[in-house]
Image (tube, rainbow, N blue to C red; front, side, top):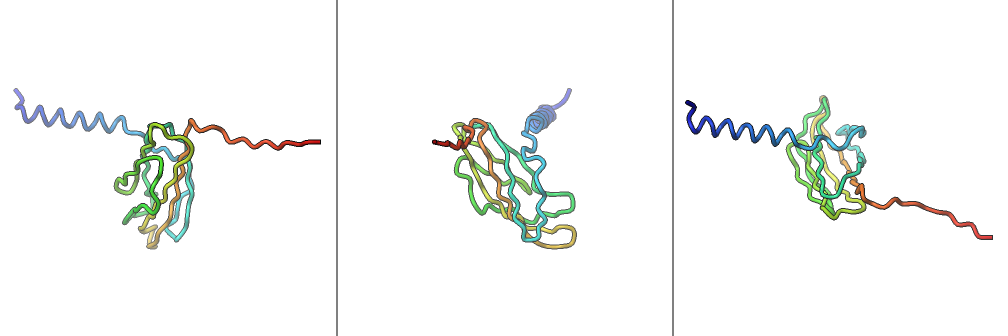
Length: 136
């Protein structure tokens, strides 16, 4: 018969596995890669109010030394997680939210940094339509 500590350890592992299985996948897809060469990149995506986004920042040839927040979001919460972030949109989020990250590291053999500006647009945001009126 297994001991209580063995059962507890197995149960804890099951909880961690289950929690990891429901994590939000990367929500920023098909965005241009930064190069750690003093460049500035802009990424954007839509998000449902109250939802969250997990995004890694490392590309295959990079080593990330640090990630810092240059500009905080106004309509959500941002948490840095290793070489990535997790953004939580407020439940009443409408419109846009932006934040800026500074990433420092090494791309192949070159040390450098990049600035990444990220914009989230609420899926519930009203469409911006411009109408030109012509009066005769």
